Length: 251
Image (cartoon, rainbow, N blue to C red; front, side):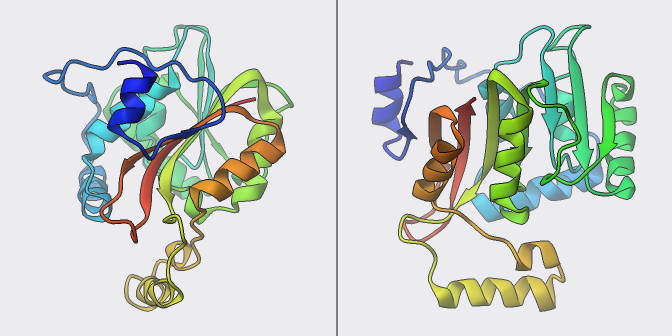
């Protein structure tokens, strides 16, 4: 599928540079997510579908395809959560490739490590505790930084600056998360969401979440010096709802 055909199919895609799409997968081909073992991840998949209307496995396959893995690639996934994204790079980046799954606490990393152990890939992934806003890597040392379904929970501007710092020239940043609708969410809707997550779901991270609009993301990435920025909307229930978006940018 050409970019013109893709844009015609999904008119919410935004770009300020070239990202040549790969050939579309045949409709009958199923996503190769062979590490689907955790009951906790099954719950995440159900919650993800309820929240976005998207199939979790298919979305993960789209994210990995967009990453365009190559032999020797140095990959950081942060915050890695259950490690499902980090696991998908095993076997795709060769023996000289490196995969690091990073999260904020040892407890979260242990959960990811157990899932990788069940999938028999734990020896191929490094697990490191760190904050997304302070990446413990040298400048220009990574080829790819991914952040999936968590950008709204972290300090976005600091993370973007850190990602730009640790990426090599030509390295790629890949974010998959919800963005606010074009005109932003209503204050009443935001207050309801904050109240729900603070007092009912008791999830402080979601209660304090911040969703950028596509325009804000484009501006911040441009200001940091990223190029070839593509924002591809995968799903929006209505013009007033958040948009689950795949964001790709090159340093």
